[in-house]
Amino acid sequence: MYVVFAVGVIIIAIMIVMFGFRNSMRINLKTGYWNKMLYSGPNDIDIAFAFSPIIPTTEVTIWSIDGKGYKSTAPYWANDLKWLLPQGIYLISVSRDVSLHFPGAKIISREKIN
Image 1 (tube, rainbow, N blue to C red):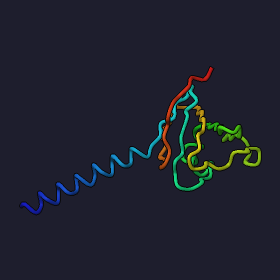
Image 2: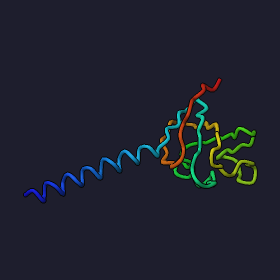
Image 3: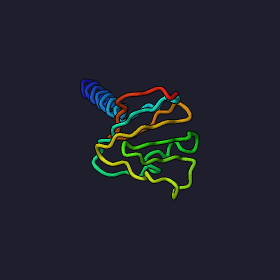
Image 4: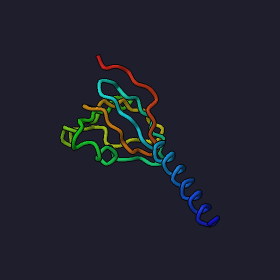
C-alpha cells in the first residue's frame, strides 16, 4: 500500500514539474499589439519553422530591431528576415490571439498598434 502511494506521489510530482516547465515555454501573442519578444535560445531558428504551428490560421508579421521583416502571407523570397538569432528582440503582430510553444522565447512588453 505504501509503495502504491509513493509511486502516485512521484507521478504527481513529475506531472507538476512537466506542466510548469511546459507552460514556461509558451508565449501568448495578442492581436492589436506589437508583442516585443526576446529570443534567448541557444541557436538560430528559421522563422517559418518556429511559427509553423500557427501560420495556417494566423497571419504573422515580424520585425527585427535592425529593420528586417517577415510576413507569413508573403512569398518566402520576399521576406528579408528569415532567422531568429539568439538574444534578438523582435516585434510580432498576429491576426488573432494565439499561444505558441516556443522554447527560449519570452514576451517582454506589448505596445498597442495605432
